[in-house]
Image (tube, rainbow, N blue to C red):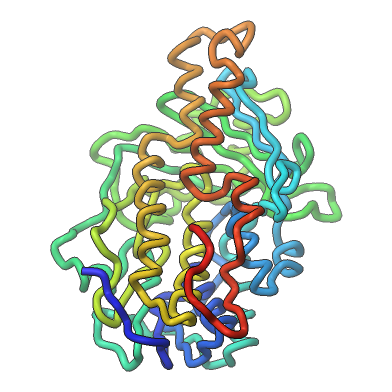
Length: 411
């Protein structure tokens, strides 16, 4: 059933100090709910992980939380995205962020640096003791008006709500990820997506260039894997040689992709998993957010982005007295659609379509995938995920007005 927390909570406990949990804490504080404690299972929060993209609809929310200057210092403002085949033939290019007409930028950033930036902001605004490390939440018992499960794909809070759910679902692909140092490619703020129907590679910079002229560049390879692939720790370290042969023939005029990946100091492997959409997220004084609510494949750069938006809508719903039912009504249908769309490759389906229609390459992409088809695919996903430019630019803010009313923006 959907929870209907009565009134405005006085005290909130958040399970998990990741992107979802920390943004929820900042959003609640900005909305006037200041008695908030974040409980994190690990004792030492370190800048782990690799790259993440924050799309304009998430960046808008972080800017409205007063974090715009910090984001600009630690991230790269993404300028464009290009899809290419394994042969290096261009399928489709489009501007991103403000270059695409958004009022807000898109950022590519190191996930760990983003987490530490949010952590610093929480401690500054809510106090040094607002985040308690070494303090896992293992069930639904809590000393607060509301418990928010923001504890990831293996959420203990979700497991308590749905004890029969079991392990995350594996879709048959493995993901290898890492970072390398290299000279900037294309604009220095570009993303490249390369591949076909069985493998895709995404590459983008996640930090401004260093004085030596090199840049930290994130890469990820998604590849169909045998059923025996281990499904344990998401960031298991592996040798690059384990998978380098899968990308040896990938060509790109702007970048030596095999050479970039070969130069990585570390690489990580994990199975590509998600969970089926839930019938509800909330029960009485408990709710879910971020990957605890809607873990999804990293297609379309929407995992962290949707977590940020969850946080803002939840804070709005609670501060305006509209409660968990309002929160779910605005967020669960949208994220459920994204989870399912990402299983079908989302906007990255153009890689598979180009391979299926022209396995030996093409002389003119318009004869294989006409421009209007490519534009419709890109637009459809933006509309589904809530970041079509004109609609997003015109949408009212989720910031809570001084005299909080009812209603709220469309999701």
